[in-house]
Image 1 (cartoon, one colour):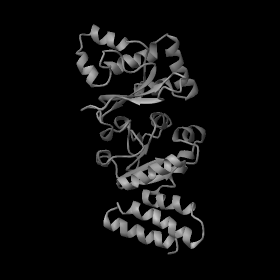
Image 2 (cartoon, one colour):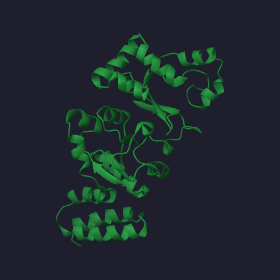
Image 3 (cartoon, rainbow, N blue to C red):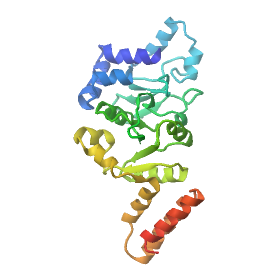
Image 4 (tube, one colour):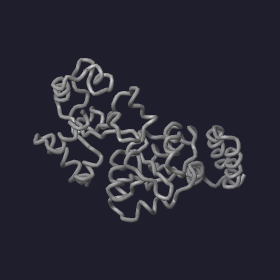
Length: 288
């Protein structure tokens, strides 16, 4: 009910806020009305419109509080935000990601539904119910709009990680429908840190490093073949991790030894056979 109310509020609302939301999505971000409908994107207005609707429908407000739609004082939790429904593999809405429409820098740009038995970010993948593997591959990005734009341009194997790394539970879920899982990391320091965390966290993934300052949304919209070209550079996440350190390492022996010392504790988390393989690879690449 909440997802449909938000969705219709975006499509049919006549308030300045609804106009602003449509302007942002359609004019600024290039999202079509068909795509808005496909992903059921919505709008949470200001005030307590959802609370009032739930009361009118005779709904149990305690359940709405538990699901994170209302605060404990029975007022709307989401205020003046574009709403991205997060669904399970069958398309059932489990929670929301929400982007602010306010200019106030003190307001968080994105917030999510509170964790509850239905909405567990470590067990959900954004867009999975709409995705289709291509040649047995799914590509995992970070942002809601990255997924949305990818699908709009025909890259229907793109899904969202619901965070900066993929959990073991998410990997198990995705292995049911795809042989190859490719993670896309930003080329900045935050992206490098996310790659390192994923290597430590484990999993069997391919990875690509995006050009500095560009995200999938930008690459897909600005260059017709840019996204395919980016994915063509995929390698195992361990190889990408090694390469990130290799290109930043000076030529002297002490510099190379220091770089290997940084790698060693990270690879200590790998399974024995993979640890042995990549230890030999590091020694070869760094000439040690």
